[in-house]
Image 1 (cartoon, rainbow, N blue to C red):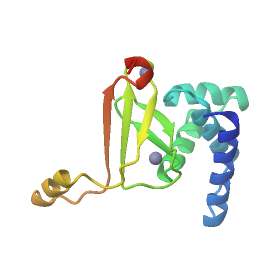
Image 2: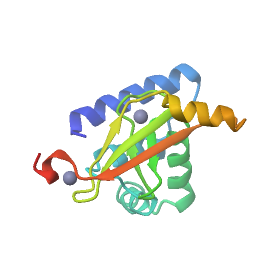
Image 3: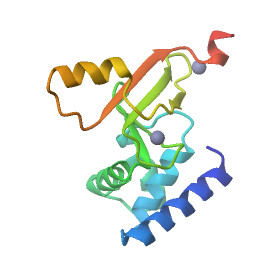
Image 4: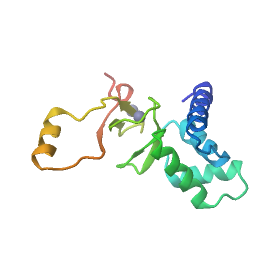
Length: 148
Ligand SMILES: [Zn+2]
Ligand SMILES: [Zn+2]
């Protein structure tokens, strides 16, 4: 995300939190800026390292709690297979998340398919399974890397 976009995102989150009476603390804002400013998904450890440049010796729980808050409110997503985080480009809570992960350059693109594919929906219903959330991570090569 470019600087201007990061700034806009921060404003959006600020307004969202104000509306719902949630606290948008400085560590939360900084962590959002760090994740949004990263070109590729960033792990919690690297978030903490960068947070250390802005805050005086932040404790690990400060970073983890900020990450948890941002994730719970749908502003960032966790890419399970990379154990790293990206910002949500839609700024909303979705029922599901789908990501195209480039194994060459590490870029992650979010594909906004907000409902469960019909086949999967049928399978979960048949199994009597109460679905709460789902995510799909598709690995391969992005347009640049595959030269397509
Ligand atoms: Zn999203
Ligand atoms: Zn790539």
